[in-house]
Image (cartoon, rainbow, N blue to C red; front, side):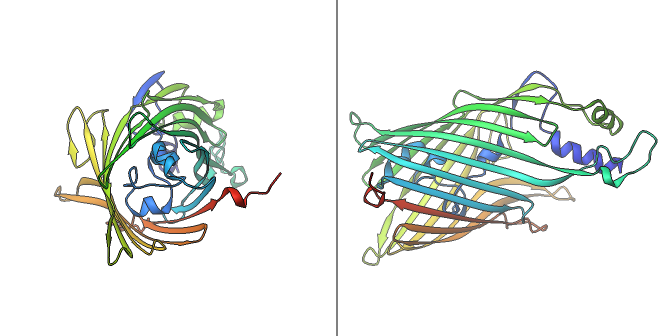
Length: 364
C-alpha cells in the first residue's frame, strides 16, 4: 500500500518544488500538446499553414487568414486510451479588413482519481468508506489579436495573452499568466512564420492546503510535502516554412510543412541539442482533393532512448488523420501516439469547425 501511495503522490506533485521560485524545464506541458485534429494529425507542424481559429493557439498572426465574420472551433480528445480528457473551444471574429481577434479555452484533466489519504487511520485500520475521488485539471484561456502590417507588405503579426489555472483536487492549485507573439510572411508562394511562446516567461504561483493528517501520510510514505512556490516557464522560439503545390488540374493540393521548436533551458532529449539551445524538428503533410477531402500525416517528438540492454534507438510520435469540409462545416479526425507504444496509449482526436458569415447572423 505504501509503495502504491508513493508512486501516486510522485505523479501528482512530482513537478512541483518546495522552493520559492524555480525555472521549470517541463512546465505547463499541457499547452504544448496542440489543438485541432488537423494540426495534431500533422505532428503539430502548423504555425505556417494554419488558416483558421486554431491560430489563436499556434500562431496568432494566422488569424488574418479567416475570411468569415465568425469562426467557431471545438475539439474533444480521449488521451492515452481514455485516461485523460482533453477539450478545446475557440471563437474568432473579424473586427475589420485588417484585424481579427479570438478567444480559446483549453481543459486537460484526469477525473475520478481515488483519494486514499484517509484510507488507513492512526491505528492501522483500513476503512474503504474513507476513499473519495477528485480531479487534476489544467485550464487555459488564450486571448489573441492579429493585424496586417500595411507598411510591410505581406507581413502579418499577432499576439496572445494566456491565463492559466491548475487544480490538484482539494490539495491546491496555481494561477499563471504569459504572453505569446507570432508573425508570418509570404514570398512567391513560399510561406514563413515565427512564433515566440512565453516570451516574457510564464509564471505559475502555486498554493497548497494540505491538512495535518495529509502531511503525516506524505511523511510516512517518504514523499516531499509541497509548499507555496513560483514556477517560471522559459521562452521558446518556433520557426516554420510551408508551400502549397497544386497538381492534376489544381484538383489536388499538397502542403508540406516543417517546424523547428527551439528551447533555451538547457539540453533536452531532442534530435538537435546543445547546452545553449535544443531543437525539435516537426514535419507534417496535408493532401487535399477539391478543397473538400483531406489526408494528413506527421511526425514529432523525435528522441533517443535506451533499451534494457543499454542499446540506443530512436523513438518518434507519428500522427495520421482525415478531414471533410462541407459548406460551413469542417470535421477532422486524428490518431496520434500510436508509434512504438507497447501499452497502446494511443489518442483519438475529433474537432469541428464552423464558419459563420455576417449575412447568416440574425438582424437586430
